[in-house]
Image (cartoon, rainbow, N blue to C red; front, side):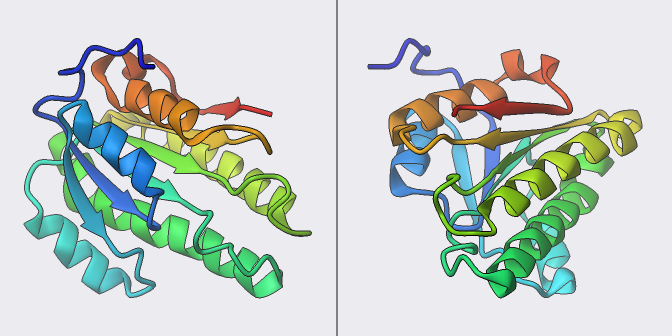
Length: 178
């Protein structure tokens, strides 16, 4: 059961990168967000061209879980590299030129593999760094670290709140749902 207003995200465009869960996408769409799907390709030129053509964008949501599904060192590298490429492409293609936007990075669950803590720390560091580097452009960044028992609906409500106008007050934060 959500406590969020049904039209909370009306008129807001959210880029989904990294294949977020269907429940998360449904929750955002159910609150009125216009969802744009970006395959978190490692080809930065393709991603930037896509972001340039997507029109006005309010937020980018990157879910590292799918890229990290292998759980090994290669998955660590892929999840963090995809996070940076997708985030930078959308930010430079749409958020920075617009002078506003939100970056939300979702880390894999802590039990996703032996390198899950490293991915979680990397995404937290990326959010904190971007919050400083992109503040002058009006772009804010946060990271979410789901706990082992975090339900999809709980994660969806937090993400919806963060990409709403009320979530603009949070920047450089880690939301540890452990």
